Length: 173
Image (tube, rainbow, N blue to C red; front, side, top):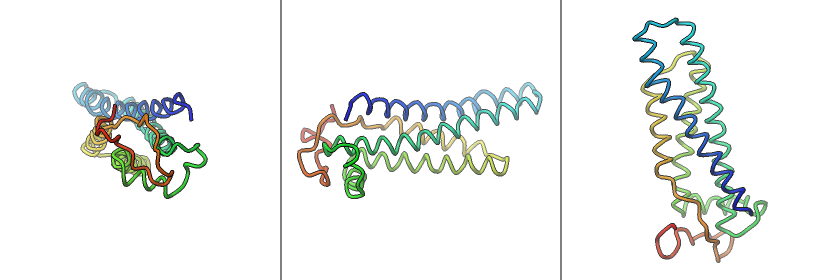
């Protein structure tokens, strides 16, 4: 598997998470307070809010998809298997439950799903809550801050037993 491919997947994931966070941060910290202070036109405000929510929704969708792809790529890298062979429930389960990357991945995936549900709620009802925007975006960004770098070493054990992460020395280069 190419390191370039893994880097592109990680880059797409980071970009999508930062984009969704930026949409929420701009909406909450800049746009909404400015509209309130200036008593700006309600229609222009709604148009920008809809645009930002749509951009955030696409960003979250890309974050979920690239996150799934990243998990697959990391599982293949840890096991030393090609991508096709790494798509097994036992290998993915081992990576998710027995590695630091997997634990963090589960946390971030849950946050992305909650955020996607919230955006769907906003879309269907036309309503939103600023505190939930803020909460979701902050947890999403917190997951980015705790990101464990993708492993650079291959497992020497069987593909279904990825116990070599973190490396024996305890540090993740």
